[in-house]
Length: 232
Image (cartoon, rainbow, N blue to C red; front, top):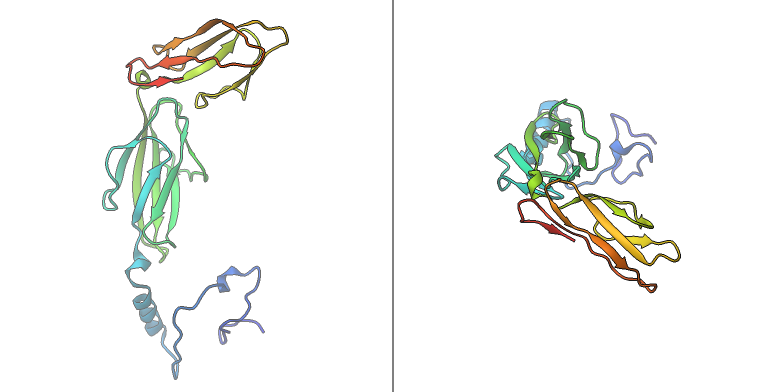
């Protein structure tokens, strides 16, 4: 039998493609007579409690970077500083109430951001607006995140690695620090040079490395302009 406005079946198998009827029962009461809409609404709100209207965040974390302040649900504005080499960052947003809806928007254009890492603007700051909608579907809170890249002088990343022979595997990525090099047969020496992402960083290149037929390791060392960061 179908579920209608007159009948409902507890424990009835729901329609496979009709998720609005799926759920669980925490309380079950039998009443004599008919409740008014106002009474039903009042009892519903009493049962749901304040969480029904709660649009606060419990936490917001980032895959990398440093926040300007410890998170507080009563504070709505934050700044996140990420490494100079970052081109995206993942934000994990957790509302205080599990069923609250979370959406991220581009703070500059207002466009809804797709799921996954937030792509950073090529120049300047990246603005993310975090919208939390409570279970009531009406109550909302907004949190504002400004993502700032650190100064280039702090970066020890490379923009590229060049070889006198062979190829890097995998393809170069500024965030990857270990590679394999496939050399042509008969290669006896190898030059390896790096181009810093921030031109004022220093790179210790390798020239005339003697190739061991059984394999070996070549290391490039990069030091940031401010001397605080080193990558190998």
